[in-house]
Length: 446
Image 1 (spheres, one colour):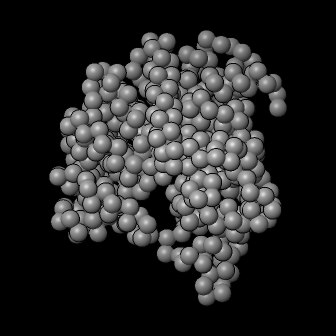
Image 2 (cartoon, one colour):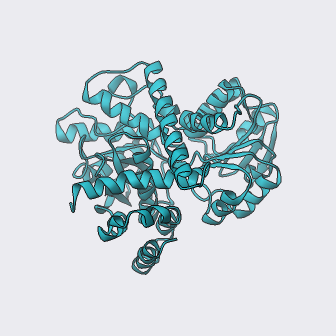
Image 3 (cartoon, one colour):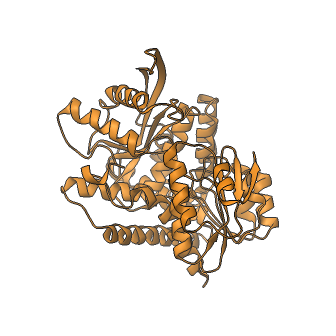
């Protein structure tokens, strides 16, 4: 890490020592960009890093709501608007009991560079609440979403900040949020993405992140004259990202043999295909947070409380949540001769695990590049809303494929430029950082 980057990181640690997740995301980017900082001293003289690590604004607010027993409940909401030099702030809302300001800043900082890599006109932001929709009635979720939007509406707009869904925020929650915004502002505008097709949504949005992850993996394989056909694949999670990954891997001839949830993971040697893929979606929509039901229904092995990284595979797709794959898991994957690791979730590998994998004899695709298909499709939704039209499913899929190929090529070319050919972690950080930093310098202090 350059002296400049290290000084800014130490400043950040001193200022926000409790924000461990946020400091992790900054460290991950900073350790890659030393050659870029050394090659352009204007970044330091313009104090680009100091500007980048402080959000344009961080908004935290109280969210009171009533449960079905008429009792008042109180949660905390957050929206962090990080950087908008490339376009409106863009990033999801996460509703989960684990949400803190540190996690939102961590994800928002990552979002800056992910959005930059798409080549689309979107800046970086993130939001959410420690409210957990699991176990809540539809009425309780509506009450919460309406109260959340009462405050959030002051800070968002179709050309200002356009939130989307994330963990705990699906089509139902987006619907309640959008409906409240529309009533309050007397305006039907594309202020949220992930909407229903009938009222402003885009085809393929639920699958887009997972499809994009596999499209990126496909480009990685093509780059060394390989392909997905016949590959044995392990996947964690069973939500929208995993569902999209499973569908696209099957389409390209691979075989997914694991899924996971908070309760453990299933191992299905015959592959998650046919009605099993449909059952994944039923599980997700049921609000059931376990995968044991899959094991019981299809008579496969269930491993309670464990993760799927001991199972031998050609390609691993961690698609559940941040820091789900630790150093020991990374070592197990390499020991079992994994050839590719492609991140579907945001920051699913710990810093120690990342460092080990970068030095191992595998090809490693980082989340900020691989899972950008979701936000790219959200940007497609914004474009469709702005023109009051809908693209066909094929149009969206083709545009998504083009964006993921563009991201892959940027990452590969940036890695080659600095004699780190094929290091996608390095390439993604460098390509994303340069696009944002150069725009910041072009626009001056703002």
